Image (tube, rainbow, N blue to C red; front, side):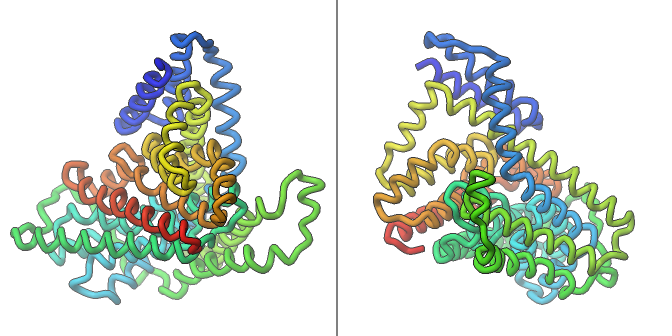
Length: 463
């Protein structure tokens, strides 16, 4: 069918142009219309403006409606943690305590702690890079290992696997499966351990091999590193407390506090259920508390004032949510095309196990869009009802569906055209040729292995 060719051409251009630095907000609707135009060759019809306003835009708006609060509060929380020096203080503490000889561990764990607490992976890259570069230079570890170490700590297990993570990739499944951020804790911990120790095994192996070959940090003349003086940073306790509060409050709100209130009004007045919104509400309230505590503890550290910092955080959230929402709008157009039904049928026919179909669709669509959250949203919006029905027949819990979907989207999303990968390489001054092999191993191959592991365990009834 020619329509399938149109989809392939459109997807290739999306990946290529995004890789070349084009704004997804601009190219996504254009390429969606390009794919839809191929319907003419199959005897169908194509109306460009109708495709844009009636298919692309409703999906974009629906995504913003559902997830903008998390993007907004996550960006604000990340910004106040960054500007107050809290993120740097945590990294400084961890690197000091771990000591020499474990520099890779120090970078990975620093990224993991702040991203698990709600700081965005982009902020983590900016915050940890100067400290990591200083550590690697002093230990004479090849700099090409630094971006993979940051990616392992920020782009993998804290983004998708560890129960309770406030990252958007763990929040999206809640609205489809009626779960919360702590869904399937055993599976999440298993996946996280595979990613962490698998990634560390690989990076330490690369480090030993490089040192045996006499390779050192290297000569990087264009480095312009600015490391905050530790004596001016807030204390570790002050810095880590808001992160702990976010995690604990999220759990308390979702498991105890919110369920104790009468929520019958949701069904009568708002045509929804408490189960559908409780996870989102818990995360919103937890992030608000986290932001408030960072400001309270570090009020005098905001050189340009709290208002300016909050404004910067808000502005940062706009681009992030619009990029992902545009990819979701693109996906919504694609999934309505006749050609996509063939692609979808192919993905779903691979296995009768809904976990396998869910993992394949989430991962493939994340790879196509170059976005874990974008691919996950498209996959669940398109197939979640089928997954739920099949899982119910097999006695598989919605929590297992949640965790498999979340972990699966964090695999192929970090192909070379992924925005986070490109940003990380730009921040560190490295290239795809120097680093992507190790980034891919830590963020694509090993997470895929962890996904296979939890599919097996989830099919056995382990939650």
